[in-house]
Amino acid sequence: DHNGKPLASYGKHGNAPDEYIYPWDVDVSVEYIYILDVSQRKLLRYNHIGDYIDSKKIPFESRGFILLNNNRKIQTIINSV
Image (cartoon, rainbow, N blue to C red; front, side, top):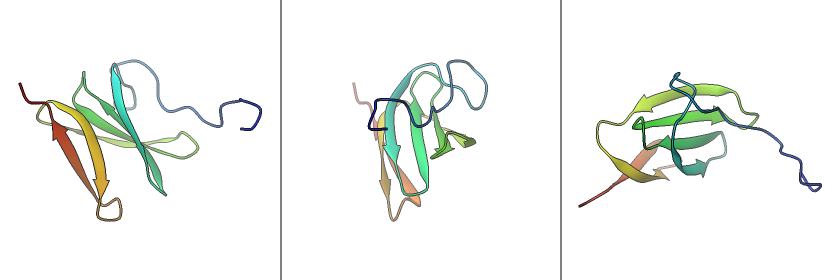
């Protein structure tokens, strides 16, 4: 808020479906907050008040993502060597 107090928090450190180990990228849509955990190769989704919605495993290493098509599709950025 305007006084510096957090409005919401999103997840916590750990291995559970709603937890992350190494959050790397975050994006915000009208409906959700997305967090990319590069350590567990998953994308977590929360609502704006911080409630966990779901997560999806990513079958490859990704260092970022972009919401596309009115937030209905997610384009990942693959880390090349």
